[in-house]
Length: 122
Length: 122
DNA sequence: TCACCTAATAAGAATATACTTATATTCTAA
DNA sequence: TTAGAATATAAGTATATTCTTATTAGGTGA
Image (cartoon, rainbow over all chains, first blue to last red; front, side, top):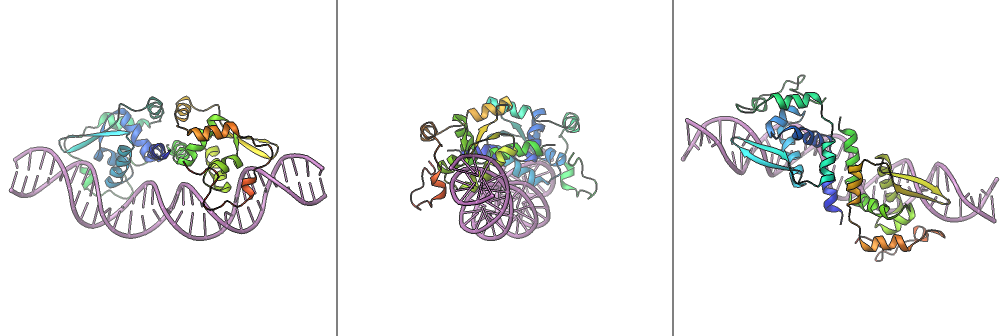
């Protein structure tokens, strides 16, 4: 009886996914943008996005090379309110507002230097 | 930044705890009542209640032999709305409305017959 | 005080989760 | 059609979760 509801909360029960949701509140973003912003690899981002999608929290749309993820607009109002209340670091908000993915996500293909993650955890 | 929020959702990310919250919406209940209603042992119930308490979702109060747990009344409105929306089996609601713990929780001390849980899962 | 009752904790096992690297898939655009 | 880019999946490992049984802790009331 509660399995389905629990799955929804499980999707929310991870700090990385909460940060992703807070980020997507600013604007939709593609996987490579999230992989650059977050301190985890692209496959890990994909796995988180799959959980969010399976829980019905985000939708995806393809544009050119990229798949953009966004928060679904038809969420339960109480759930939507909780997501709206999530905090978001100023740096994260600014990154999304100042970046545009239109040439390439080169960060993905290059090897990250151990000591200098692009914009790791805050 | 999201660890604390994630802890809250982790507390909600389990079907047994969601059922406990739905039950406590009807009235406060002691550990032995929940242990009788749920298909798990008393220590397991205690462990779930600890998680709910650590997440700030429930409070406890002692009365005679028993410790009664209840949903906290000062929850965030959006969170409270989500809990209010949880389904609850009619049988569960009726059990809480027709039972009273005032003599003893004998079920706890006796050994449960393998095939006949008191009011196991629905 | 002390026997009794309820609830909490400890320890350990089975399962689930979240990450990594390596590889496969899917779409774009020349 | 095909090379290349972005994303998804596979496999494996480390950690976290949830249950059990056994035991301890703590409050009640004669």
